[in-house]
Image (cartoon, rainbow, N blue to C red):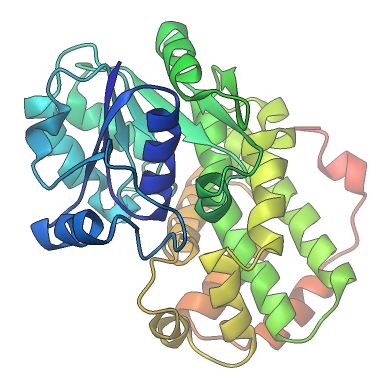
Length: 336
């Protein structure tokens, strides 16, 4: 089968290599001709050092590569999803599954990314969300990994499962596209908090607290938006949260460490070479969604105060620790 991967960052490249290994014809699209030329000349992505790009992998900056493909994988940064989906709407063959492997919430509209894609495609193609604990650096090195693909179309989800799954990448299907997307976007906010905890010099206890209560907040918001509570105990919830909060592969965690050491979020992003830190954008959207749904998310709101209002993270943590006493199970009976 033929596949086009739209976005030649580390994650897009890793997914393209999985499809190529599985025997599919694969084209990897870059935003500019210069980016595509670098990949063609080096046969290595600078974001995935040591991972060779086989000659069989087609490289292009021409978006017409999506024509006559059996699947299109969309892996651009969240801020570019709408613009790219608009272009795909005019080029993709009707009925071709679009696999959304980007994570985040659209700035300005607070829409989940699959909702943005569905708006632009107007029902022309089924949308499948791919998410889970999956660092590109490890998938590119063929480290055993499991992810979930979620879609309202069971047929599209199974097709994507069959195309990607092999002995080192296990794929589960799910009908809960909202839950998978909420988990994917929100874990980046909590990873920033976990990194900030490390940067401030706190220990494992503090990080475990932020991760656990952070997962509670993610589930609260997801359930309020129509997600299934079980999703947050799975790969797109707990699994993705663990890997993003504990690994130095995580840009969000690394940015959080710098913020905990005293940098502003913008200084942190500059030190990371201008890397996209999705948790920064997701924090503002999550606050808006939580306000709209009437959901309590104190850790997320604290992250917003640190990131957007430049409050001292030590003071924000003290405020979180001083909140009114609660009963854990009674408080969370709505989702666990």
